[in-house]
Each structure stands twice: as C-alpha cells, then as structure tokens.
Image (cartoon, rainbow, N blue to C red; front, side, top):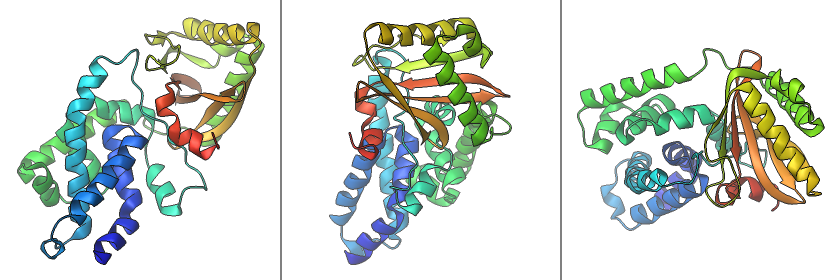
Length: 295
C-alpha cells in the first residue's frame, strides 16, 4: 500500500492532467483520480507490477465510462458547452503547474470534444503523456495498429484546428487590456478594430446564469454584444473588476461583479486580432478559479 500511495503522490498531477483533458472538467478530474485510487487500493497489491501504468489505465477507463453519460448530458446542455477553466498559479505545485499548462487551450479541448472517446484517449495518452501504443492497446482493449490509427486521426484533426504558431503571451495580454478598455468605455469602433472579421464569441451559462444561447459571429455583432452587456451592467449600478490571470495556459480575465466571481474570459488570436472569445459564467465551472481567488 505504501508503494501505491507514493506512486499516486508522485504522479497525481499527471493523472489530473489526463482526466482533465479527457473530460474538460477540473472537478470531475479530481473525482476520477480519487476514485481510481480507491479502486486500486482495494485490489491485491502483489498483482500490480507497474503501479503508475495501472493508475493511468484505471483513470483512462473511468474517464471513458464517464464520457458516455457526459455526451448525453451535453446534448441537452443549455447554450454552448465550454470546458471548465483552470488557472496556472504559483499556488499549484511545480509539477502540477507544469502539467496543467502544457496545452490546455480551449481551442484544443473543444477539438478533442469532436473526437470519439477512443481517439481522444489514444491521442492524449501517446502525444501528451508519451504512453507506448502497447500500453494504450491494453488500456483500450484494441490492437496496437488500431490505436496508432486512432491517434493519427486525432492528430490530423488537432493540426487543422491549432494555429501554426502560438501568439506570444505579451500580445495576448496587450489585446485583452485593449479589449477591456474598449468595452468599459463603450467604444464599439475601437473594439471592432481588435477583432478578426470572422470572430466568434461563445458564452457558457449552463442555464444557471444569463448568457447568449448561440455563438455570436462577426466583428460588428461581437463588438455590439460586449459593449451592450457592459452598458446594461452600468445602468443597473453594477461594478465589475477585471483581473488578468493565466487561464488554461494563456492570458485571460477573471471578472468580479459587485464583489462576486462572475465569469472568466479567454481568447484565441489570429495574427494580431482576436478570433475566438470564451466566456464562462456557469457557476458550477468556476470552482477551481474561485478556490484560488478565495471565493
């Protein structure tokens, strides 16, 4: 049992990273890792030759089981579904911070959502965690050749969605600051100039908070949407504060309204303009952010 506990402690951050990438939920990832430990600890330890491989296999299979019910829930989800944002912070342990910031962009996670569960698992295990195809085959109950094909299909899908070259964090922060200033001053023209012509804004309220039920498309509509939203807040006497933070490995905002955590906002860039905006308001998805900010 001591060996298993030591192994879990040593690779907990990697297991959380695996489960989060599979499920898009920090809370569910925590539950999965805990469940895996309980299941493994209940087994006869002498039969486990490689505790780390066994834990990775157990976590992957638990995630695959959960994805079956998660897909059904997302079919009836109110409005766009977005992953639960996570913050990279010094509060996290060095190992955990490294794992969570590897590539957790919303763009990648949403691409993974379009894959089959097996494709997602094969890609994440091999390309992110350097797991051998032999172990992946044992985990998924498929041949090594089939697992190679699964990972290859996933890799092609990811490459079509990923930008060729990630924008520098400094450019992200600069555009976010200008975005916030334009919204706060109600300057639609200035805001529109920051946006790509085909920009898309996704708002996830999950039916718990007011949010756009459909993606908002185009620079003009997106600019008017955010300026109008802020004006309504001001008209009601509400006060908002924007905190720059690292969300899913990229600069973003954690926003408080009247002292309460209201939403996170992160963006993707195309060239030097904002091409995607991700606004998460569903309070069920803000737990990891709130815990770090003391809410």
